[in-house]
Amino acid sequence: MRALVQRVSSASVQIDAETVSSIGAGLLVLLGVAEGDNEADAAYLAGKVANLRIFADGENRFNRSALDIGAELLVVSQFTLYGDTRKGRRPDFTAAANPEEARRLYEHTVELFRGLGLATATGRFQEYMEVTLANDGPVTLMLDSADRQRPRR
Image: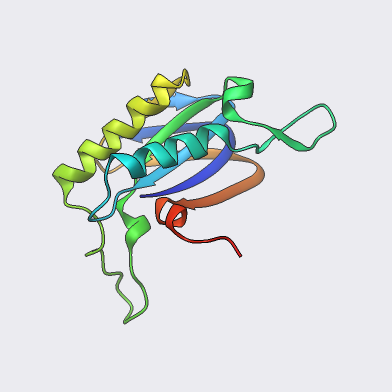
């Protein structure tokens, strides 16, 4: 699974010009699911996102996590995080999970965030959405559950 995490001062999702979700200060999490991902991948990403120390402390250093500050999350499904652009000009999305499995793991991840005590809003799975955000910093990080298998240098 992949998560593009953006620290925001606010974010919202609109569908057909109607706001369906919005948050204040917190994290916008664009979440992609790959073929072969499972609950262990979801648990890894949920824990990593919730505990990332990317919020400032009293000395303006990255020392506080979403859990520390009670940040809000907006989690939006994003299969295009698995777009392969190495060949040609059109992305290939064959690495993305099929919609049924992607929905299951997306919803499972959302429940993991909620289980950690984070107020979590969502987009709508497989809908065309307009996502609006005010990136705070800007701070943007890409997380990949496959990284837990790779040794650090």
